[in-house]
Length: 240
Image 1 (cartoon, rainbow, N blue to C red):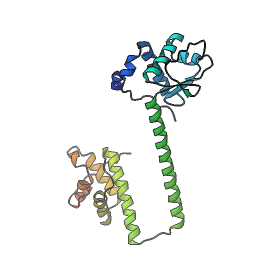
Image 2 (cartoon, rainbow, N blue to C red):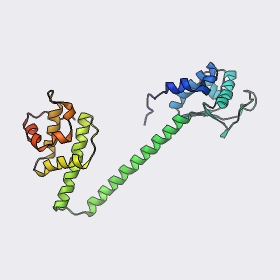
Image 3 (cartoon, rainbow, N blue to C red):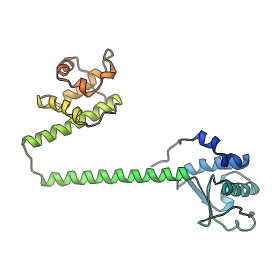
Image 4 (tube, rainbow, N blue to C red):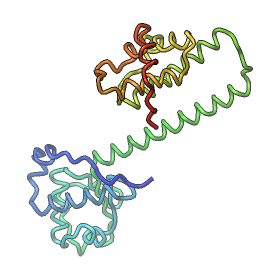
């Protein structure tokens, strides 16, 4: 998956961070450049490497980089580690001694944390979908077809959920699968109307310039006194 081309930048946090603003303008400039590099880094929110490598990619001079490291640790606007271990201010280092063979890691706590949360969420969604697919295949193989009223009600409920999803997709609505919303649609299905007819009503009223969009909701579209009239209006091709 390619990296996102843009990110949120919290200007208020930047300007109101007293500790960050206590650093010199050069260190703040290096940190801004580091944040941009972190966004595109292999591990988002973190960059690491030898001092020479970081000096090159952050476009700064040796003494500026040392000042930045000391101020980053002093004011704690950056999580800093040397050779995998956290460091304590003051560093009292120069490019010629302790840093010469060090691996320096710079991390933005918020960016790193949010990326970790995104990955965990993505993993949970993937596991849910795999489980749902697996359960669906399993049920298909062990559950015989049934024409019972219970089975029909369950099927109508699933169709009603799909219609709610379609309504949300077309109108950008936030409607959920509440009992009231589902029962309104299920009632029309029980009368013999089809899923396509329900979606036709959604299309027709969404594209009706005279229809007040505040009434673009299940309780209005599928009301028994309204539905038949909407259905008999000239159908409009459904969005795809």
